[in-house]
Image 1 (cartoon, rainbow, N blue to C red):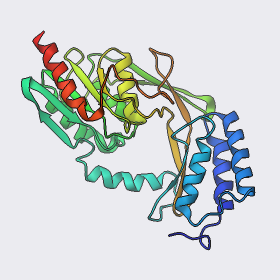
Image 2 (image 1 turned 90 degrees about the horizontal axis):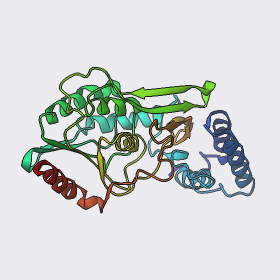
Image 3 (image 1 turned 135 degrees about the vertical axis):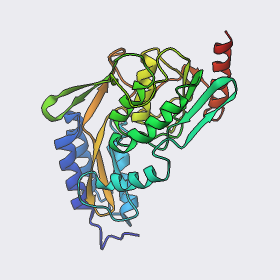
Length: 301
């Protein structure tokens, strides 16, 4: 355990406050949170036994005003690099290597219905393009497709666009991001060409969701749902629509701060706080069987 002889809360809070005020996509909320963290520090609320407990307390305070689940102080059991984003990147690479690049399951069910599980993340596209292309090309021959996002906790928006490109027929505006830095606006579109074969935009498509589905996985579900391309089956997702960056503020602590917000071109909104609402609500554990039955009924009809 990291003790207070190794961890002083004040420098961690000071650096977290600096990142909030300089980076958070909502500057007014950042100022309120900065005041809250400074007050809690002065009251001794963060005089705790170790980094893990400090992370829990600070995260609760960071999320107390607007419920932004991307706004966190994350604890890492192993020391992490001070380089920006390195804390998450190291762990992410290990998961990539042990999950077949984020496509751990491809299966053909009865009636020509394929299942493609995307988990535990939508990894950075420079890593994931090859395994995802192989998996998506394999399922392109199916009569209907079920994409399982129940265990996917997020990832790379570019990978979202890459996956969507296999599931539509023509170039499509998927999402827009508004960034605090430079007040920039950036559109996300499906690709005009993909390696391998497309499943396409006309065959039945179902997406499985659960209360662990988060962030970029939610974007994948929301984008395709808003386009009328997919039927979402399962539970409401966690509700995190703000892309974030991570900074190491202590060898065992990483501050993650949202630096942008998503705006869907169809709805003009996003899934922040509300999650993606399933078209066919059911328990996540039952979602695969339910989607398979729906696919078979549609194919029969």
